[in-house]
Length: 283
Image (cartoon, rainbow, N blue to C red; front, top):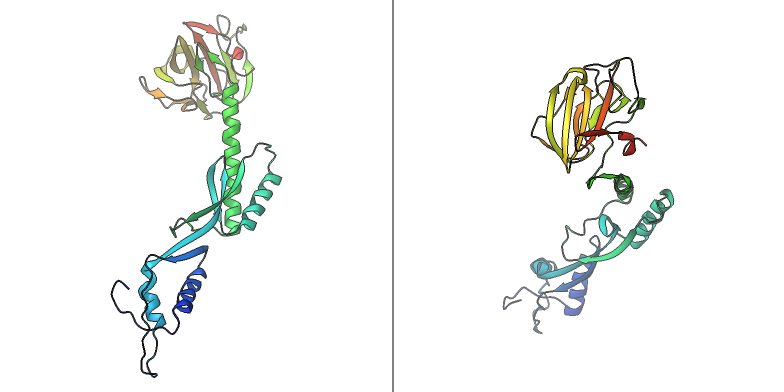
């Protein structure tokens, strides 16, 4: 090989086939080739000379080009798992499709080839099944969340993408009450003390401190004249000037200020004027 004498074999064709078959016994091997074909020379030798196929095979290992085959299971054209056989892949895909109600669940099977042994490292069937199930559930949740966000309204071009809290509405916008001197400027949603409060859209914190009857109050400027207020909070997790993203937790439900129990007082203001939050949220 490359001018170097490696030894003797009885039959060159049989030797190469045996070499390839030994490698094919490894996991997921599809084909075996040699980068360089060994040179053979017919020689007459002493009948007691022993051949050394095993030693020659070891010398040729680095000269082997091994192609591996496996089956990739993809969700929405993104790989989520790899298995050894088409039968395993089909069984997994069929089981997942039977279990999930999503009609447009885009699960596909791709036959893949590689010369990278690590890339061809596949999962045990049961482990793959668990992994696929988890990843499909996550994809369904993300899709549902995206659809929910897309269905939410815009105000002055600002997309509302999160609900501050879930809970029972205890006081609606515009109502009169003995505990306040004017009509209600926001919406009260009752929840347990400490419940995380999420900001409804991207924005900048412009106020985060105690403010009389509002108690601990956080104000967020979302741009284009849109502002949201979150009052009576127990704790505030943001400070003035901080940039926040829709869904970020900015405070927790409390009962500070003029309050009869733990709840969130939510206000939406457009160009400085409060509007009914239920025109956009909790409707």
